[in-house]
Image (cartoon, rainbow, N blue to C red):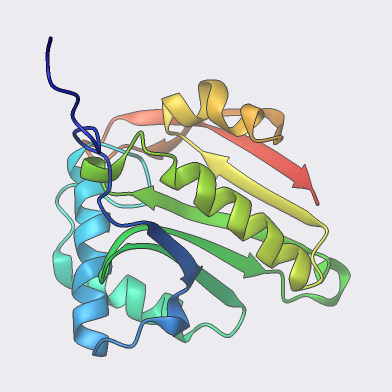
Length: 184
């Protein structure tokens, strides 16, 4: 009889904690380094998330520093101990006719932590946080095939349609993006 491995391989040994980035008490440069690492990992895996493979880590650091400073953003993270392993951003619309809605952006889970339910937990937490912010509608666009093909719809998002050749993958190839919304 083979021994039973518990926890299974590739299973987090500590519970993953989900919450607001503002609760991370590490130095700002450590947090930014961690966020840059997740972004670089996503680009290395050719996920179309707004950057090309040729973009520098300095540009990723600037991106995250600007996102952290935006008052209309809520950055939600997943931590495995003190390391951020996933993120998502909720950005509230700032124009008065859209204060009820927000954009669901940059859902990223580090490749070494995928297929563990972290993305699902981030999405659920983000939707609840958006409700608590007074939002009742979220929208997103995605060019990541496996998310578009099934995941977002499994989470209750409604597909609106696709725009061909909308964005470039990190490799530079143009791909379609699909628009979704979710009523909260």
